[in-house]
Length: 297
Image 1 (spheres, rainbow, N blue to C red):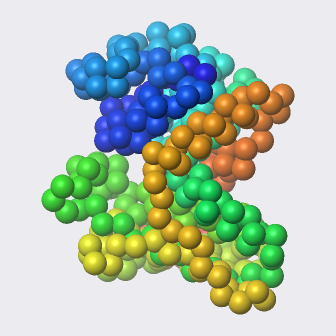
Image 2 (image 1 turned 90 degrees about the horizontal axis):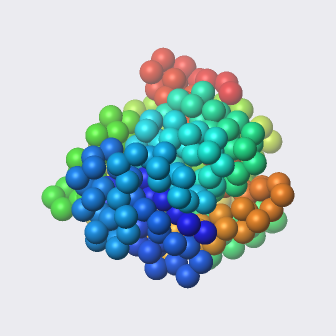
């Protein structure tokens, strides 16, 4: 499968670009970025071609891998889907639920496959543990802490404007929700409050009655930086595996997109529709933060 890489930042180069360049079933056919100088430099490092016009790149590939801010990603994903290109997208899918829904609609109309890279969902140990938890059932609650620490010297995300503006809710919140939704099911209501160090605390009431609590930040002290997911229920207390090799996980996502692209009706569990569901939940949590009220979805 021939891939076009959209984006020129750290994640584009050292995760998506690195995985695609080394993948035995993929060809990195070219790079496009909003800054042509950066695109040219990255294409040279990845030994591929740079494109100044995104439509020219789309004409040469079967699929796109997008590593851009979510508000930039969504319209480009729609554009790629309408051109018949399969979609390997990053999270969050968008910052606006309507834009997320537009990606879902475009993919459905074109019949292209979509996979959204919720990193931990593509780690074999984590995926197996999640499948086991879903099969076990009987869960009453979950607690998820994604405590990132990116505002320190040497962090590749230190200057990320969209992360500074939207914080942990939108950056690591998708990862947290991607872990609890398959186990506890759809969401009915959310309440969110702000805490210390730009932390967002979210209570999520699921339709089946379980409640999950999410602790989300990008500004944790380095000593507190961690990822932890704990389930509580009839089976006792179960902690899901944390940590991920992002490049290896992205290579798995590439494999799964290729598999989905060969199906008449793609149905990946982390497709654009699932990612859009998460955007709607995040938007409700943001509304709760802004208004100080519970928000029913």
